[in-house]
Image (cartoon, rainbow, N blue to C red; front, side, top):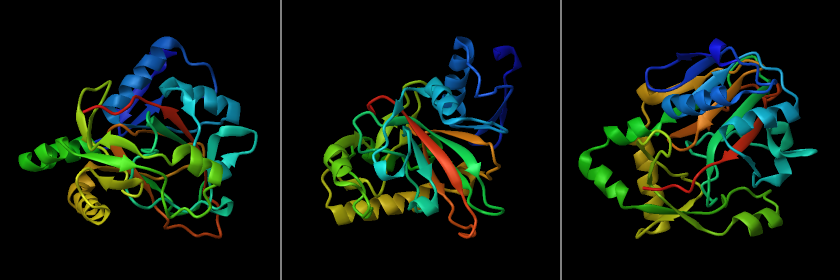
Length: 271
């Protein structure tokens, strides 16, 4: 299968289209290695025209790591608890702030994988930002400051529908560095989730939020962002170790936007 694999960059900073793979069929070892390396290099991979049943989707996702349980169990797919449903009619709000997923976990996801099942006629895209490029663009003194900082992460406080058992299981604060080294690529990237970070080491919660918000405003520029325009059957794989992403809520809520989400376990972030 690997002989048919074609990877074409989609944006100067990040993102690549992968052609020659049907994710609904078994993927051999050499192709798995190529895809893992491509994700580390390009940070976002797009597979068009996929047709996946839930079990097929879980098998394909395992190329990038073991699927891990998502902590908003009220949004799990019935019968497939490792698949989350992103769907406003299921109570999901578009995650429009820049973030990287599940930083409240000791081993946060290496990748977030999204499958476009129902797509609105306009809007509703997903943007991904290259946070290693963002880190390199910062002044040297700010990079040094960030290198020494950590965040403490818990579940978002503004999700009122979080189940008590999820808050009990996943709400214990977890400390992570604000700059992490990619375990495959070796590069460094800014790493935090502004609404899961309760505070930054040595700073008040208020000062922490102000600093992170200012960082996002300064760091995330169009030249480091790939914006994915969804087509039905697309699979988008996002490298959580060196990116942030956001949804765009600019679509007609009378239409459906349904994405199936799988997250796969990664390494504990290291400086």
